[in-house]
Length: 328
Image (cartoon, rainbow, N blue to C red; front, side):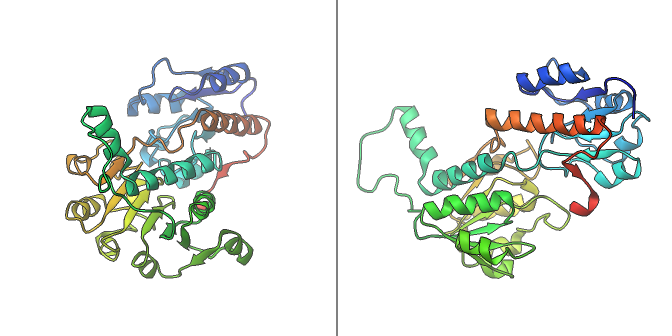
């Protein structure tokens, strides 16, 4: 463990209270602008720091970790996802990895419900008409959407966020179904009034709305592939506030364009900021810029978790949110 204050490099701008507290506790390098670091800048930072604080915009792969200096002992990621970090290679190099789980649960679940409402009630279409100044008044058949109550919601991934979505969905009168690697305990199923499906194929073919709430891992890449998307009802809607790589985006775009699916609400994309013009042009989609966890309260709580992880490490203990390969 290095003597004195830890050298910490932060790769993106963080909320002001978080940056100020870091400055008080550590020898920290903060960013003056909010552009992502280049690969060269990341490599240089990993060469001079005891602790790197990256975000999901920083791809820290095996070759980058191989260039890390002898000082680097902790990658304290700001965010709950860790698929941007090669955790196994870091561990082999003796570098610990931590994240900030649980903080964004309620915020992301709120946004999931917002997207469900936006797609099924055609909110963006109404907004566009009002902003254009072309609204001609109420009509019995104008902007007809669908009622959420009574529909079947299938939740793919029943972790913290999936369960938070289920609690909200019940209040809207949705019937909750789910597929998960492991079945929930009976008391949790009862509390959520949720029906478990061992077969994902069987579940998706019967749902009116499918909400993606599982992480991106090798086993979930394109879990919703073209074959599985075709099992969905043409009247069904798909919502994704988790990771874009879980859905085959090209197949989804084709099906939405052909009206083989009724609609989609997406906050994440398979290729990051590279969203296809074909998808962006579709009238039956609601697209958001990865803002599901974007609340002031959530970002500050994430920063506090990063600080606790670093401080605990500095005191010679295991960070409370350490990530190990077996967890992935």
